[in-house]
Image (cartoon, rainbow, N blue to C red):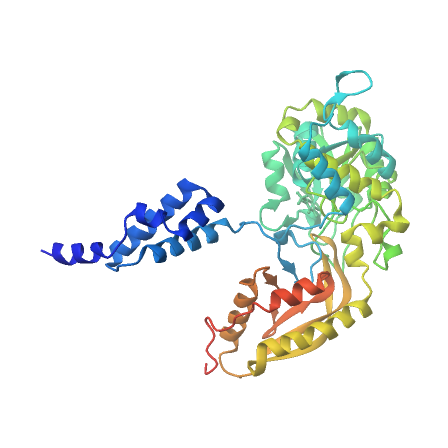
Length: 472
Ligand SMILES: *Cc1c(COP(=O)(O)O)cnc(C)c1O
C-alpha cells in the first residue's frame, strides 16, 4: 500500500556503486580501506531508506566518511589530567620517563633476550633483568615481578598460606577502589583470614593469641587510602617481625605504593621506603610499579630467597607474569632510581609532585585569561590556591599545595546544569580536559599541566553551545 512512497524515496538514493565512484569515497577508501567504506556506505543508505529520505551520492559518501572518521578515534586517548591527583588510577596512574618509553619502544620493535641467557647461550629467566636492580634498591635477597601489586599479594598468599590462616589487623582490612578488597583477595588465594584486634587498636598480644598450628603467615597492610586517628594503637613492623620469627612464620608486608627513595628530599612527608621495611624484618614486601615508583603497571615481591623460590614454583606465577614491553620500561625506570639527585628531573611522577607552587601559579596566571576569553560572561573564572593529592593510596592525608582555576556559573539558577555542561564541553575537546567538580565550581588544578601551548590550542575548540542554555 505504501510501496509508492517507498519507491519514490528509494529512487532518490544512489546505489553503492554510484557512491563508490565519487571523489570523497575514493579518498575514504585510501584512508580506511575498501571493505570498511563499502560497509559504511551501505549503512548510510540503509539509514536513509529507513528514514524515508533521499540523498545525493556525494552526501552519502561524506556521511560514510564521517562515520569512519568517528570510529577511527582511539578509544584510549590522551587527556589533560587537571584533577589535582597526580597518580590517578582512572587516568592511568604514572606517566613514564623518556628512558622507559624508549626502552619499551625498542622492546616492541625487536626480538629481545627476554628469557635467554646471552652469555651461556641457554634459556634464561625473565626476572633476571630486574632481580639485581630490585635487590640493590630494596636491600633484599631476591625479587620477582608480576602484573600488579594485587597479583603480588594474591601470589604471596596463595604460595605461603593456601589452606592455612593469614593473621591481619582489623585496622588494615583495606578496600582500594572497590575491586580490591583484602578479605576477598585472601579468600581467592585460598587463605583463611584471621582478623585480630579492633578497627582502631590492635596489640601485640592480639597477634600472639591468634597464632596456632594452622597459621601460614602474618600480614601487615599499608592503610593506603585512609588513616585511623585518635585513640589508636598498631604493632610496628619490627615487633611483628620478631613475633613471626619466634614462631617460624613469614611476615608479609603489603606496602601498596612503595617508594624506593626517601620522599623528604622532594619536600614530601616521609613514607617508609621498601629498603626500610625490608630492614625492619619483613620476609616479603609487595608494592606497585605504577604508583610512586613512576613506572608501568606492575607488582613486585622482594624478600627472602627461599620464599621467592617457593613463589616462583607456583603455577599461578605464569598467569601473572609481565611481558617484554613492561619489563623494558621497568628496567629503565628502576635504573633512574639509582640516581636520586636527578630523579625529579627525569621521572615525571616525582617531577610533578615536586613542582614548585610558584611555577604552577605563574601558569595559572597565563591560562586563566584564556578561559575568561573563551567562557565569556556565563562563567566566573578565578585563580585560586588549591591542594593536589599524590593519589593511588600514597600518603593519603598528604596535601601538596598547588594552584588552579575555579570556574563558577554566573547565573544563580541552574548552576548544576551549567557546571555539567561545562564539564561535558571540556571532556569533548580534541584532548579531553578532566577537572573536578566541588562546591558548585569546576576546579582545574594545573599541577599536571605541562604542555601549555597544546592546552591553549586545544581550548580553541571549546564549544559550549550544546546542552547549554544561558537563560536557565
Ligand atoms: C594500591 C594498593 C594495592 C593494589 O595495587 P595495584 O598495583 O593497583 O594492584 C594493594 N595494596 C595496597 C596497600 C595498595 O595501596
